[in-house]
Length: 84
Length: 334
Image 1 (cartoon, chains in turn yellow, orange):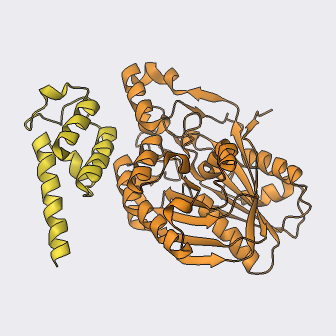
Image 2 (cartoon, one colour):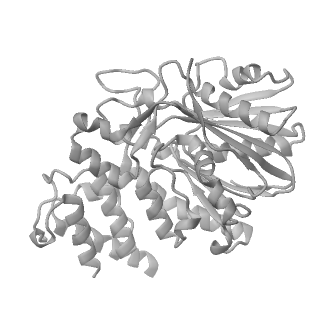
Image 3 (tube, chains in turn blue, green):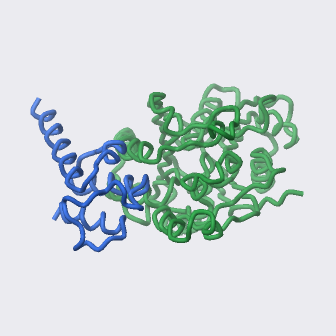
């Protein structure tokens, strides 16, 4: 569900059919992948995964898979912090 | 800084907007129709007000202040606090020019504060301090900016967002208790800035905004500060009728609202025809929505929160149910 929310938002932002998006879809190079899209993605990630990502971290993601790796990395960091 | 001031009330608010309205769709040729539509759909802004070359921030504040003083039949003002990033001149202070123009006594204390989106709450804090210190019965707070000359013509991310406005607020001895939380973090100074001198090659001197960094800052700090203020006041989130936040854009406001689990009715959004008006955005939102807020009994427990350039962020809690809030005035330069 959470993963799907990211795909749905990306489809909206990039103006690409959801079915055309895969983990390997490149973000860099998509015409609409700009600061507005980055800000929307930060909000989507915060809403659905409850993790705060930074704008420049999202900007560095080259593919959709990179976005999920970033989320995983943040979740692990947050869990470690709670564990401490 | 967390603090509270007893026996102080905000008694009146007025706002003036430049008459000239820029429909953002008219910029389609410059930025592309799809691009303008896409940005408008996200920001919720379809038009902004733009001051002409003759209009200064003080003109807008003067109009708002003169109308407010007349409507409230005020016969004395002990201090003027002018909050802006677009002061009329390097010197003298714009607040002093306003003292003279408004025909106020030379006994008036007047000074300028340089602040943007958090500036309205900072101005209220300063006004409350002046009254609490004992020297002033009534303070006129003027906030606003004529920011459009600082928008680089091809920078769509600022040109499709920012507009001009000026406000006037009267704060006086009364029965309310205003609590404040104020924060600063200069490490984010580069996220929203304009250098002193314009340079057409480097674009220095024009407004530069790192939208994602500001978004990240707002998401991180605003809900936290409002939760803290609710705790200070011992208020439940639901009993606050209005959360009047700085009007950055609709996307950010909706997002903050959802994050704080607040109702649509409690978080007015008034960016559609005016955009982001910096330190005037909170009083402007009140001027545009107070009829509904009053009708729904949402003004007696209100929270105002500004956030942005600095970085700087601040919130206050107050009762606006007895305040006179005028509809926005239109400024036409002569």
